[in-house]
Figure 1: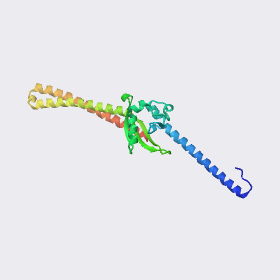
Figure 2: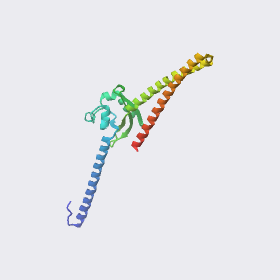
Figure 3: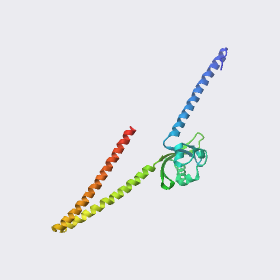
Figure 4: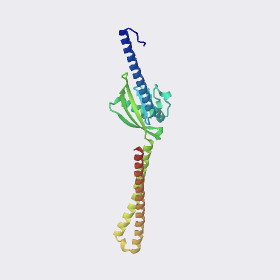
Length: 225
């Protein structure tokens, strides 16, 4: 505002100009912060979805839409599609609204082909609406590796049990008197040696896998650091 020549009006006008400049700086700061927050929200590796108590989508980022196989434009400000709610996500959201504490749960999608770890809690927005905010992580590969590990342990247990049982049986036979029969003793000793070598081979494989896992862990830690 142009500053008039009258002192009183000049001081008032100058104060208004200062306030306007300060307000402009604050608005620009808020706009910049909003842009930064939106950039972080959009580019997070985790999926983020915010819904109200009627399951209407208030906020969702690209990663969350990708995990659910939907388009942001098709769900934003609309009720979450029924097919997603029916996958267990709807019941999970109800639990969040019913509880006071944060809630973690695994959501199974595509008939077990994808596993999503969901961490959700209730929040209040500026209009005092109760919302559920959920952070989504794709843990499919982790669950697959856990299954492979379980299957591997089960298989190794079986592989170990067979030679151990065989060795034990032949040792008991030798102790019962077969050791005095040279031919039988040599035959049994040969079988025991064979199964001992098999056990040793299994143990070496386990040690090799252990070393590989440790090496992978070290590499991962180095890449993070």
